[in-house]
Structures are given as C-alpha cells and as structure tokens.
Image (cartoon, rainbow, N blue to C red; front, top):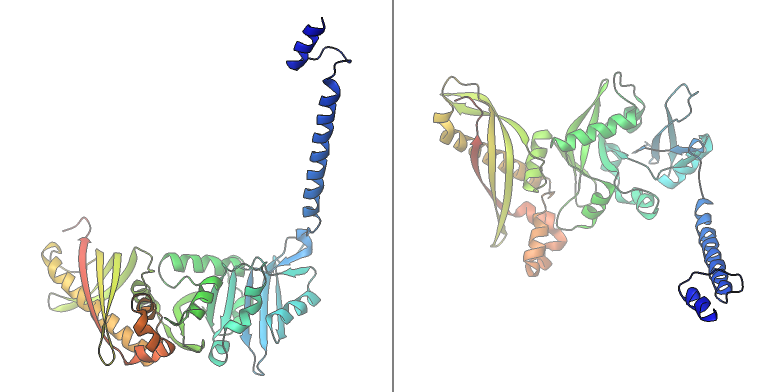
Length: 393
C-alpha cells in the first residue's frame, strides 16, 4: 500500500492530506503568488504620473516670428475637448525672449497645462529668418525628449500670428488645415518634406545649405509657394517657386512621382503648352578638377505626355518632342543652378557627394563650400524618353 501511495505521488496524483508532496506544492504556490504580487507592484507606479486630457492644452501648431524690438512673438493653437465650449480651439499669443519662456507665459493664461509634445506644425516667419539664425530658437525642441521631431518645419511669407489666427471659411480647424495642406503638397511634389529632424541634419551638414518649405496666406486661403533657401549662416537668402522646387527635388533625387509639368514647346512652327508627367528621374554628377571644379550634371527622365494641343499626330513627333523637352530642362536647370551660384547657396548636396567620394579634396574646400560652388563651372545635359503618350495617336 505504501509503495502504491509513493507511485501515485510521483505521478502528482495526491489522494490524502498526509502525502509528503502536498506541503511542497503549497510552498511553490505561495512563491508564485508572491512573485505575481511583486510584478504588479512594479507595474503600478507607471500609472502614477498620468494626465487627464481635459486638463491639458495640447499644442498642435506652433509659430514664432520676430518683433520690432527683437523678441519672439509666439503663437500656439490647441484643440478644445469640452462639449460645452463655444470654440473648438484655443489660441495663445505671447511675447517672450525664448520658446521656453513663452511656454511659461502660455501656462499663465491657459485653463490647462500647455504640452508641446504633440506639435505637428512649426511655423517660422520670414522676418525672423532674415535677421537671426534659426537653429538656436529650436534648442528646446531638440533638448526636450518629450517633443516630437517629426513635425513639419515651415517658413511663412508674411506674419505668422495673422496666418494662424485668420478665418478660413469652408476649411477645417487651422492646425488640421495646415497639416493636410502640407501632406498634399509634399505628396504632389509642390514643396519639400522638411521636419525638425531633417533640418537638424541639414544644419550640421557642411556639404549643402538648408531649406524649408514656404507657405503664405492669400486672402481666405493658404497657398504653398515652394521652398525658402537658407545660406551658410542659416539665414534666409532666397525663395524658389513651385516649378523650381520640382527641379530642385529632382536634382536631390527626392522627387515624388508622377510629377506634373507644363512647358511652352515649339510644335508646327509655333509654341504650344505641352503637359507631361515625369515618371522617373535619375540625376548623376561628375566633378572634374581644374583650377575650379567643373560639375557635370546629367539627368535621365522617363515621361508620359498628358496633353498635346496640336493638330498634327503625336506619334510622328515623338523624337522631336523628346529633344524639345530635353532642351527645356537644359535651359531651366542651367538657370536654376546659376541662380543658386549667384546667391551662394547649395541645397542640392553636391558637396556631400564630394566629401564621400573625394575626401582628400574635400578637406581643402569643405570649409567654404558655398563659395567654391559659386565659382565652379556647371554644365547640364538632360536625356528625356517618352514612354507613353495616351490612347490617342
């Protein structure tokens, strides 16, 4: 009988309270409960530092500009979650010496704690970009780990506070309107996608100069102008329109395709507005060293004709049209590069390629690369291939 009880205990089948295995199992169970309790105690403190949503002011759009006396005019917009509120957003406008000080002043007039960790848009006035360096004003946004660096960083042609507080009939709330407009403009290749993180990289990159997407207010609507170019001192230098922005993005190999373009091209003895869609663009750069660098730019394009308002058949004119579009890009890109050289800005990133592939030469020119680029000889060659021209002949 004792042997049968021992075998049953070994099989973990206990039939009596006097079994020697039962106290051991109870001890194991107690230890397991203690471990579960300790684990829960460790997890519970994670909920101690919580915030109620209706006691916060989540700033989704933040803008700042320079006042006449040199201070910052900071404007913030946050949504209102109360159902009884008459307005769906709060607007804060304060004058301060820094962004950190502006947050304290916003807290003084807010009905909740101002939180900037969910910012989606950071708007900077062109007046500030013309008179001071941008990067130091953004120090708190890079230093605070709770602040996202995926927010758009956008230059404003005009007064930031007026743009953010204006009424836009038929449009959603300003912060949503700004975000949706930028998403659409970037997706359609009308401007560049520059976030706080990308600007941080461009600021420290000596192989190129920084740039920001540029927007403006036109009456009761917002519009995307193109991009604003900053010089080597991190100040505003010039702006590019939407067509020039598309060309810049193609040279940087950052274009969004398909990219729609319209150009006045010769056809049948007259000039016609021909529209085409760029499906693919591959830029290549070759640098030859003489007294000054000779930069050879080649661009291979695949295009599709979307509109050709001519009486002649397009199929018979494809080779001529390819040559005309190639000449068009040669002229436009050469003019763009000359403009960049005149203003001593280099947003394309040619210097970064030299630094990577010819580091020995880069050591001699890297400190003053925008000046070296301005003195360089630049030639452009474009090769266009029309892949499709629609279902009509």
